[in-house]
View 1 (cartoon, protein in one colour):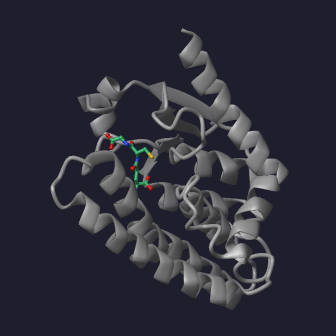
View 2 (view 1 turned 180 degrees about the vertical axis):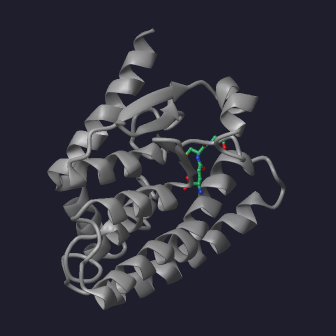
Length: 216
Ligand SMILES: N[C@@H](CCC(=O)N[C@@H](CS)C(=O)NCC(=O)O)C(=O)O
């Protein structure tokens, strides 16, 4: 069976490829695995049929031959385990690439999503103006550490891996903020990821969905 993932029927990011189906699409494209997409409205995401697949009522999910997965990191790990190209074959290098997957999701992305929440949901709070710089300083600290480790390497650890997909996807969430540009090598790293043909195909596919919804 062709794997089926879920995505927003109309993404609130307006086609910028920040919804987390984007990184799953990217992983599929990197390994050359065709996939289908089931689009969901916000209402459908919170209904029992979807909650049965995703306990938190979110996208993306993954379905294939009776297997249902949620969490973009777990889905990408599953894809990477079943297809060559996203995890090294050498056991130690593979373990290190998996460490980078966790680092992207557990260490780098959390302060970035805290900033998104501060901007999107906490603007009206009396403490917003005081909190935002604190959150941004936490991001700066992480990016400085990541930048020091990346140095002038092309990817995080040798060949491009699933760790790079997740790390670049986390960094892309900074959008037009100057935080990324403060570290030239991280900005170039993201640009290198975005220039990959697999990224471009994934980006075009999610943009097509957004444009179709905008027209409807
Ligand atoms: N940790 C989850 C996060 C999933 C997530 O936040 N999904 C967002 C879209 S990127 C969503 O469905 N938001 C709608 C909602 O939470 O109601 C993952 O990586 O899959």
